[in-house]
Length: 85
Figure 1: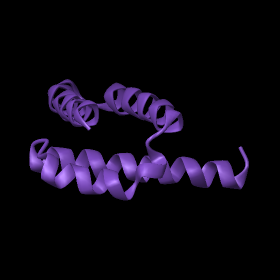
Figure 2: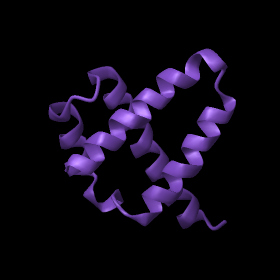
Figure 3: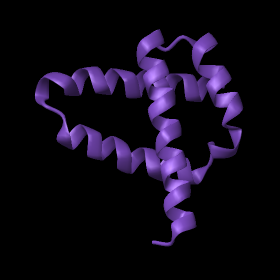
Figure 4: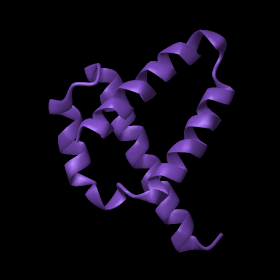
């Protein structure tokens, strides 16, 4: 993997972490999430979808059973906000 591709991947992962943390902290409040999305419009593309799928699968596979429900709720709340925009 070349350095530019790796840097791009890290930027997408950083965005996912930021927006999912905001989703979790705000219980999916659009007033909190949408400004983050607006600032990162350039990352709302197919690359993000691929990164999100891989990252989510990785996170869920490493989570202890007690955490998986909470993680899934955050993913679900993020998906709802993503679809409503």
